[in-house]
Every structure is written in structure tokens, then in C-alpha cells.
Image 1 (cartoon, one colour):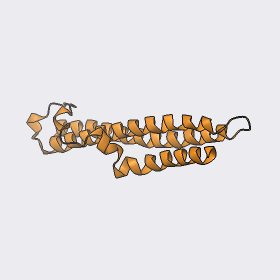
Image 2 (spheres, helix red, strand yellow; image 1 turned 120 degrees about the horizontal axis):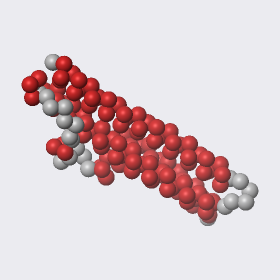
Image 3 (cartoon, rainbow, N blue to C red; image 1 turned 30 degrees about the horizontal axis):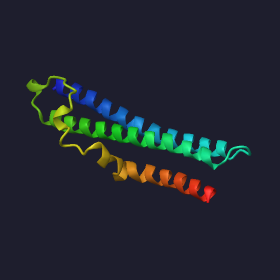
Length: 134
């Protein structure tokens, strides 16, 4: 039973790390976007500078989706290891068996977990740019 519990702990630590990375990305996204908006608000810069804010927003959106997908893959592995017998445990962290089961990256980008955070941010940036230009 010790091997099974140890393997489950390894997988759980990976899942926790992916979740923490996702949380940190959301914090960095807000921080960087606010900093770009504040910098663009100085007297000599115009609204064209705000286009730069889209770069980290889109990049972090993709990266956050990637972390969420990896987390889902490891959750599938966790479920499989949980149901295995003790003598079959091999401490494998290979998630390639679940690639077809877990949603594709583009679907995760627009999922409730990720999309509900990044789509409004990108919308606010875009609307602000258009309002300042027209």
C-alpha cells in the first residue's frame, strides 16, 4: 500500500503545482495589464501603446489553458493509479494515454475556468483602445 500512496502523492503534487501556476498567471496578468494601462496614461504616450497589453493577455491565456490541460491529464492518471492494485504500481507519470480523453487546448481556452477570466480582460483592452481612437 505504501507504493500506491507514494505514487498518488507524486501525482497530487504535480496537480497542485499546475494549479498554483495557473493562479500565479492570473495574478501576473492583472498586474502587467494594469501596469501597461498606467504607463500608457502618462502625458506623452497615446492609446496606440495599449495594443501592447494584448500580448501578455493572450500569451498568459494560452499558458493558463496549457496548465489546466496538464492538470486534467494528471487527474486522469490519478484516477487510474487509485484503482490499480498495489503490485501493478510502477511510478509512471506518463499521461499520454489520456490525451484523447481530455479536451483539446482550444476548448480549454474557452472553458468556464479560463475563458471567464481572460475574455473580459481582452474585451476591456480592445474596447478601451477603440474608444480612445474613435
